[in-house]
Image (cartoon, one colour):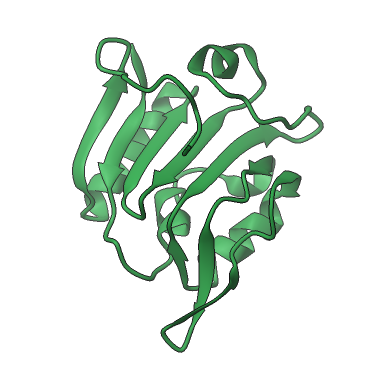
Length: 155
């Protein structure tokens, strides 16, 4: 069974999270933001953190604005989407993900390595094709057989 996708993005400034999530309606969800290390970029200089620490329940409209209307540099990122009016929490394992209301997990490690888990299988296919269209490297499905990740965390 397909669990998610993995791929590599360029290790450079950009708006990659907005590109990656384009097929996903960010505005319909509240988000857990892990507060990992990523920065806004202005005049080719790293500025303020993209997210000011751990956030439980960022409105998707706000998140979409941040991710699609800014340039930033990702080092580590941990985002999890929950339907509006559901409890937003930081789930730690794939098994917790399956039992939770969380619908999507997006993790970025070392500026380039992206993992996305998604419960909606049609949307997962759309995210996969979107990654290919954007020219990301090593795009592949994560399955029950090849998933070596033990924690849904970037640390």
